[in-house]
Length: 492
Ligand code: BG6
Image 1 (cartoon, rainbow, N blue to C red):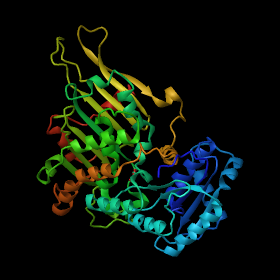
Image 2 (image 1 turned 90 degrees about the vertical axis):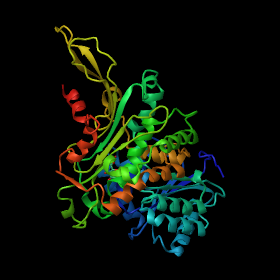
Image 3 (image 1 turned 90 degrees about the horizontal axis):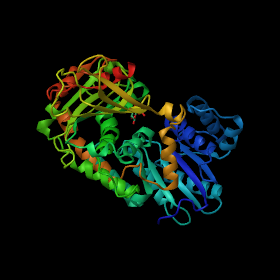
Image 4 (image 1 turned 120 degrees about the vertical axis):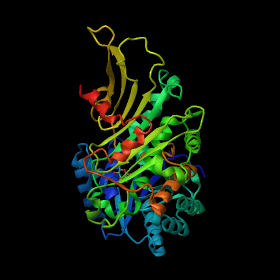
């Protein structure tokens, strides 16, 4: 049933994993800010469900603390008190059918009539099936009166087979249009702006292809190590944590064709099309097209297996087999404990076919999409150096969000995603086939890495830009990572 979102009914958001970190740090601060901006449904309430034995009052206090520490915006006690009056809590076990009956009864009592329900799984995917089964068995997924939606946190599976199984399990009880799979990168303003840069302008798109672009670099670098998430991270590693979702989503947005409309289905059709055109790296190509590495000291982090071979850094070269991109390498890299927090996409254009200038000082043009921090977009081009006969110098044209829109213009990505899910817009959520296509690209790499330990695990110094092997990957093609060069332009 495709219920309109603004049906005027009370909306209940039920959060599983309500006593956890994500709820306290991201979900509630985002929902509270939406409430302050008057964007939440007129009538709404939030019911937390989790293992901790909170009362409603203790739950509110716990979340109040979270908002004070994490909100990143100023708010008054009065605003919080009005919002907090809509927060409730029920303790229970995800595996206990009787606890779901209690939840159903509790909701019926709180709602006192027809209501919409959005179930948010702020939990690892291993418990999604049992929760969905229990919701289904207690009749909570039937759209008899209001809509029912389920938001699933990442990671969605650990490989292709597990993602396919998970999709089958959730599809037993839900239609695809009731499922919202989160990739928080899609909620970032700068990530959404990739499509606007490309398709709301006419100056970029005509040159956005293999005729003009030499290659593309996508870097998502973090300065943090594994921190308190070691238990989770050590079992997944960088490919599952960052590439299958965030980096491949960035590649998709850079490379996809314009969609027929801005609707979720048209947009996601184009995304699946481009992911399907990515040339899978065959097992025998893994050692020359990928790099995996671990930062020094990782094995002595609390919660990490002392013999762990989990990679905390990876780099790879991908090709897209379609008319637009054939032969253009996409270099992707991500890692923890690197020199800077930096997510950026560099489009390196080709050199002019022939130079008429006697001094060969020109550099190829570069477009840099700064996703975070110092969000913006820069174009590097060549200008004649004054007081020279024919020397060129690279100059930079810059757009900074903070300058153009003000420092507070960029909301937390969860705000947008929660709002979209409440409004029934799935454009920024990954569809079942999209998730599976992305896993299909990662599977042969993961299998070669894990079953054959090929290529061998490199290591890198915390605070560096990764292992030498990461540089070699590009050097073999006569290229180099350009982020430091791009940053130097900024410092000038
Ligand atoms: C998460 C990963 O999805 O993204 C984390 O699980 C990572 O390991 C985080 O730190 C990075 O997100 P952001 O928004 O800080 O770039």
